[in-house]
Every structure is written in C-alpha cells, then in structure tokens.
Length: 69
Image (cartoon, rainbow, N blue to C red):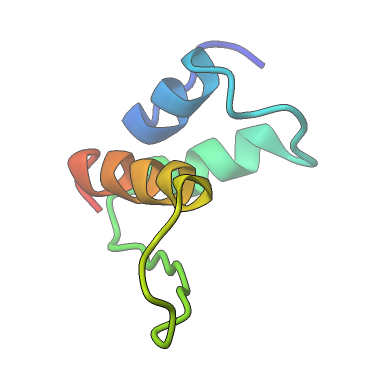
C-alpha cells in the first residue's frame, strides 16, 4: 500500500498495529471520505477493574477519536 490518506490508518500502520488487511485501499478510502464513523469497545461492566490487556483497544479508540471520528 502507498502512503495512507487517513490520519488514523497512517498512525496505526506507523505504530505497527496493521499486520494484514484484505482491502487496505478500500479501508483508507472509507476512512478518508469525511463521514462520521462508529467504533465500539465492549468491557465487562461487572468486573472490578480494567487490566493491561484493555490498554491497546483504549489507545486505538483514542487515536480514532483524535483523527476526527
């Protein structure tokens, strides 16, 4: 893939979070079109606390938010 247009895809690719994608160009086009996107992370609300394994999805959600979505 060439340099992504989407700031979110550019960030997660540069940080090594994208290992494989079926259609990277279509994903980049969808993320670059400017329409609002929805992202969801589910946590167990009955748990006593979050753990370090929750950090990566939270960081990805934050990068998604900082990218304008």
